[in-house]
Image 1 (cartoon, helix red, strand yellow):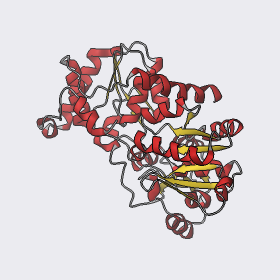
Image 2 (spheres, rainbow, N blue to C red):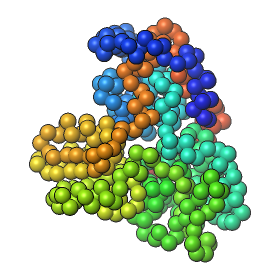
Image 3 (cartoon, rainbow, N blue to C red):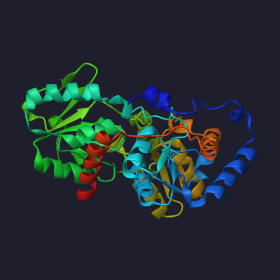
Image 4 (cartoon, helix red, strand yellow):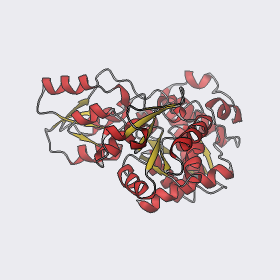
Length: 369
């Protein structure tokens, strides 16, 4: 479903202008008042990439699937105000019970990576690839994808993956089928497959715009079909960033997310999920030096939390994730006050058919993990 369709489903439209003019102190006071009033009936998950002004009110912080699972386990909350992006709120809605209401404070908070694979493109790709490869393929999708793409994966025998468990899920998938269609992030797919010993020469890229398989050689040699999608934040970390920082200080440790390009991951000292990055820095020796290749809000928070270490962004000119940053203090307050008035806006609802197939893909992953 497109962001425009989601916006059109909301009850309250766009945020009233006066919220943008309100003093920060007043917004904080009003949010705290509502949190106190609702108590356990209100649950606010906050993704790692959110601004500090939002994270300060989060009842739980973490990555997208982790937060959806925490929401699923919380049976007391009547309202789940998900401070993240739309695919995360979709997953929370699919995993929670039908009486619980999942709200996204700003319906414009999408994900450019998730939007790089829609159902029309995916159905056409699957048809064409099946003509080439027959019944030898399994789809896997990163959890950073729409509910519809997760459902497609579930219907076709596949599973979702996270950046933490992608290696385990891909290993399982390759025992079931000869080839994998990996959506929507080519970099996570490539880096994971390479770590498992699949050479780059056995990886092709599917271009959903040109509707063609990009590969030089015998196409029957292909093991990984990588969807031509990417994270607009992580793709901005470059080989030059790594080389420049290493030239400046050979002792610095470079750790990056596997959504970065293969070349950047290969030049870095470490790579791993958001959780692995956070855990690695937490366990690092005092006075150790780190350059981190992930979203800037999280990097700034890590720097603040570790004054005993020298930490910086791998790309000093990096901007925070723009779609994550759509959720700010005014939107959070507006969302909560609409709930308080009994007319919540930004409600996320995934239909039953899509939910059934998408949860199948999620459960396959969880059972393997």
